[in-house]
Image (cartoon, rainbow, N blue to C red; front, top):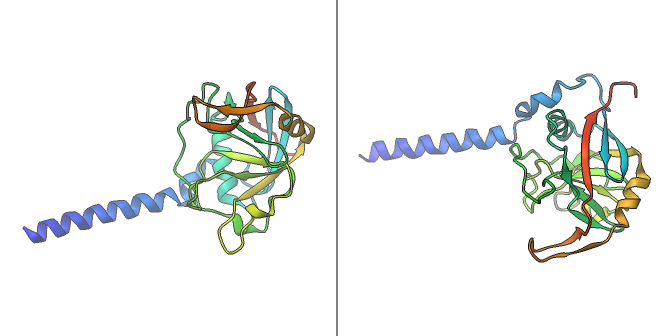
Length: 207
C-alpha cells in the first residue's frame, strides 16, 4: 500500500514538474517564433482610439518575450482590449482586459528576461507581471519616463522588449486622459473614458 502511495505521489510530482517546465519553455511559444523568423526587429502597429503607435520589437535581446507578444498579436488577441491603467509620467498599461473589464484568457507565464540590457526608458515597452518575476503573460506597458526602479538590480526587473518608434505623441495624449478610482473594480488610475487598442498587426518587413 505504501509503495502504491509513493508511486502515486511521484507521478503527481512528475506531472507538476513537466507542467511547470512547459509554462516556461521557449518552445511553447514557437508560434511567435514562426512570425518573420529571420527578422530580429519586427514592427507592430497599434491602432487606438487616440491614434496609431508603431513599436519596434527587439528579438535579439528578448526573444522569448517578443515571440510571446507576437503570437498574441497574430491571433488578434489584443484587438478590442483596453489600457486600464494610466499614470502620467509613469506608465500606460494594457493588454489584459476587454472594454467591459473582463480578463482575457492568456497563455502560460514566460521567463523573465529583464537582464537583457534593455532599460525602462521613455517610450519603451515592457511586460507587466505580478510579484513573482516569472509571471508575465499578456499585459504590457509603455514607459512615459525613464523609470530606473523597474530595471533589474539586486532583484528581478521588468522585461523591456522594444520601443515606440512612431506615435509617441499618442502615448503623451493618453497620459493626459482623466483617470479615477473605480469603486466597482477596486482599482485606481482607471481612465474615465475608455482608451482602446482597436487593432494590433505585425507590419510587413521593411516598413
